Image (cartoon, rainbow, N blue to C red; front, top):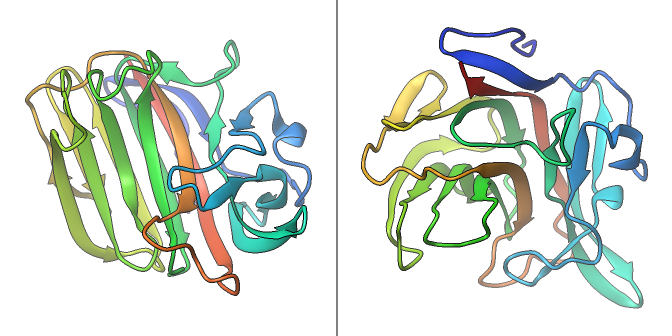
Length: 237
């Protein structure tokens, strides 16, 4: 399925990538640094079990961005390698805006111990007060969920959650429409949730956080792929 190109009613397209460029392992994000960045090595992921190492995880080939999630020996110890890439605007070091439409086509192997939390995170870094929006999110061996952490929250559980029966190994299209009036979560053409109260209203950046799931670390033998066919971002007209 090709990436959508051009504006939509109410939305101006600000970023799109169909991953037609070849970027082998070891070349990301340097080979595409005008359009992509990533959390750097040696940052730890949210659970602490994973090590951000985008150069050993991410590649572009056959029209797909690919995360190869696996364990390698680094400095004499096994490390679960993960990556959190983010798209950039031409005029900025990261794609950040207040309100927007975010669309992507993705799939993943059902890897025990790994997850995605592709999210909008406040550039203020004030959390949970300034909210957070996650879609898709979920352990890769479980189902696809979405979460809207509400504005003015005082604890992380102040949120609107919705989980589906859809699983990651099948290709899916997810669309998040974030406006002042509602936050619509759309999976494969169906609106799964559309909260309207205490919607985040501060500038957010888009990060494709792909990491260990927490609880217990992945087995060292666990290895597989998260794949992104295309993604597109829009600003309100």
